[in-house]
Image (cartoon, rainbow, N blue to C red; front, top):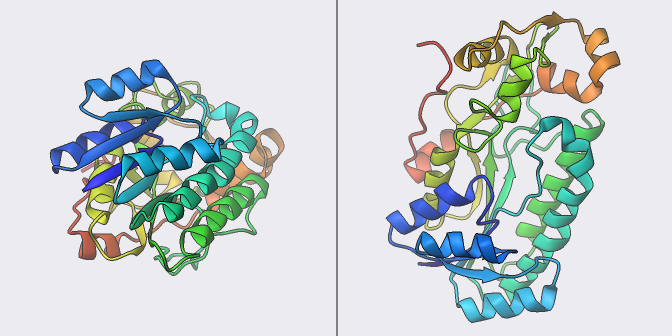
Length: 303
């Protein structure tokens, strides 16, 4: 299959392109700079330099590419977690406005299938249960989490707005692995080294992770599977009180401190408390069943 990848230079871009090529697909990679285009071409990708905000140029690029599918991995995220507030507006604009241009280009050019990066960590499920693909995004969460959930809801609404294209929502868990925040030297690892990420209250918020390479494998499998929503998370949804100390140990950091909710609300805000105490975690049963996907065990958990 001939596939157009937007966000080809992002965190998932490199493993995704490698997996696409491994599976025999022809790849057109979208980027915004000549140096990144050269890197893509060095990996055997046909690179196109185009700005997602230039609707006319983007449509022309998609038309010239003559692709059967588009994978939208457009994001604008910082290297440091502390910079997220500064990047939030730009990231939303890229996903909504830039991604909207890409989606409309896909429709205009008769692209058959559109895969959209979505979220598997802002889903709302009853306490003690994992969210499945029917679970709603938590648009009434803490302020920044709710804003992100609303963005992802908009993306999924757009994705399934037309019968002219087959939509696939990829609800990824938190990425870990090379070039992600959750990796030795990455932003999350630096935070635990500096003891800036405490276990909050009982640490009952459940996080679902996925290795970046496993996410790429599942994404490629979704190219030819039935359209719809897929939670792409590993089998090891874990409360913060379990995964955070294990992660800290795996990167050689001290045991994370424990703080109560009031302390953390005062020092870091409501969102930090939400992540630590209210996340639901997600079930990957559908992806495993339909995609034949076998994600690895969360690497830092004890055996």
